Image (cartoon, rainbow, N blue to C red; front, side, top):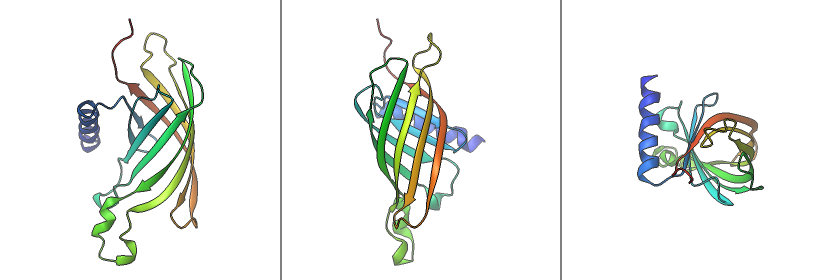
Amino acid sequence: MHRKLLFILAFVFIAEVSQAQAFTYYPFNSVFSIATNPSKAVWADFRFQMNSYFSSLSTEVSPMFNLNKSERAKFYIGAGVKANFLNALNPDASKQSPLEGYCLNAGVRTSPVQKLPRLQVVFELSPYANKDFDLGVFRANLGLGYVLGKKKQ
């Protein structure tokens, strides 16, 4: 538990330093996300596995596209790749490719508490296939997000 908290605090610090605009934690999947501004029409999402060994530090990179302009709920779609750059250290040459698979994303970011519009509930459906397209899984992600930024006047 302490290790997870330390990782989350480190990623929040990285998000602040790198001028990221939002972070989300999916507790049921142990995934932490740092994103560019999800209020814009096009944004990027970077996801990190929080419950894996150091030999399996998978990262997903996904460009996302908002489908509507509502303030309370933003529906989005996107596609991305899952990579593990530590695969380059694998002694087996057939397993040294960083690419692990592909994903599609369709979801909603909603602000259910009107007085806290930057606090968001995120729900997403995300089919995933490995790089050979011989294995896949239909994922569902539910998490809490927070959008950084200045308060609107």
